[in-house]
Length: 286
Image 1 (cartoon, rainbow, N blue to C red):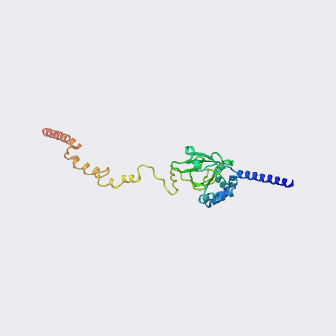
Image 2 (image 1 turned 180 degrees about the horizontal axis):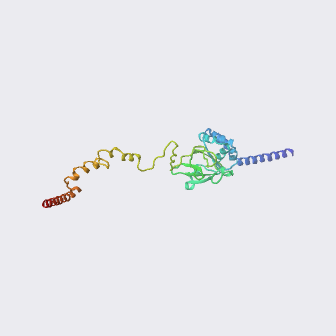
Image 3 (image 1 turned 90 degrees about the vertical axis):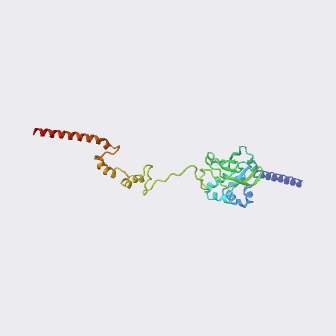
């Protein structure tokens, strides 16, 4: 009798332990730390997930996609403040299962994905969402859904997957939403704009406005004005042409002096005739 009761009790305990194991298995279908621990290229990223305690949150999920960074790309995240590290890393955890086949099948070749950062309650506007796009050349890129954010994180490869619980995909660069509080890399220069020229210092003079230059003024005063060529003050104005024989002498063809010459000769002849008449009258009187 006692032995049968003991066997019954032992069977009940075994059943309870089996059920608990099943519940534990369903509650934690994966362990991201152990999974990434199999790949030395992601040791820095794995360490960051552990130090920020995001690994614990990931393991509590049933369906998840982790966009992992290799040791080179994760180095920039390590330099950020710890609170910013957590936000940036949470942007790399998508609250759904996506492997390469599922990404290939997305209609319209683009989608907005919800991240663990969005569920934290710290994200504002579209800060906790990712944009995904498959480009015409077949490459897949991710970026923050915040306006103006760059699509700079290219998918490199699938690292591991356990359908349909967890997928780990490697991306080329960290995804940092604008305004999250840190920068992993220097932003790209703005296109289409040129820097305005700096104002002149106290020791510099401003460039003259477009117009007659000093060289033009110098050319007006250059020796050519006083040289052999004709000018207002040159020898032609005051030379023999003005006061020389041509003015009172025989008229040249086509000149103003030539036009006036016959009238002057006629007047001279009249005066001469009048003088002779007066002289003849004086002689008669005498």
